[in-house]
Amino acid sequence: MRASKHNYADVVQVPIGGIGVASAGRVLSTLLGSCVGLVVQDMRRQIAVLAHVVRPNGVGAGMGPGYFADQAAPRARDLAIQAGADPRDLMVRLAGGGRMVGGGIDVGARNAEAIKAATYKLGMAYGGHVDGPADGGCVLFVDPAKGKVIVRKLNGGTLDDASWRKLVTEITAA
Image 1: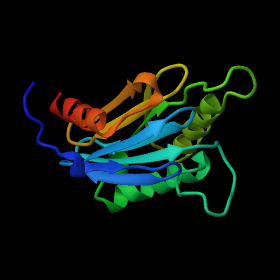
Image 2: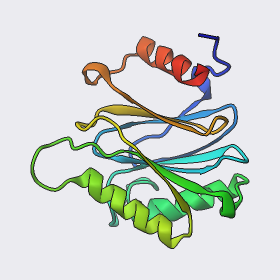
Image 3: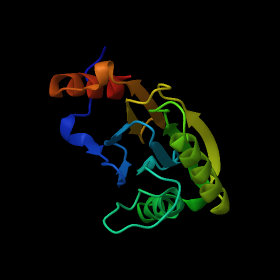
Image 4: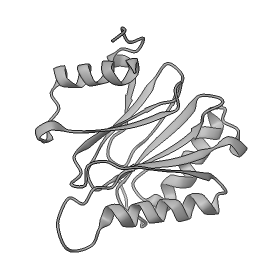
């Protein structure tokens, strides 16, 4: 495996309910369970936005800009355009949305459907869903330079610092 041109500082970590923006030379990442990673990309210009979507819709004080799907979609689109993306070249991909608890409401599936509906209204092309583990517990990486959206299962549900650095190197070198 060749050495990575990225280092740990080049990874933009998107928190729960947050939104991150990156262009070539940086990588976006977030941890997912039943939440869905909304990725808006302009692959020609190597720009990507990642929103960590927790719920399909709603309002709430103190919630991040990516928390609700119906609000995250237009914000992600706007951030991509502000970063230099062409609205006609924007593509949406989803990742994650595992079913963390048996029975009851499948929040991951509801998030994915809400994101699809919101991005369709905005006229963005849908590029598919990158499935994570059925039980959640995964890390999502988005590499704007390569147009890649990669999901990796967390081994044992944890990711220590050494494992994180190894994973970043693996993802960015591929």
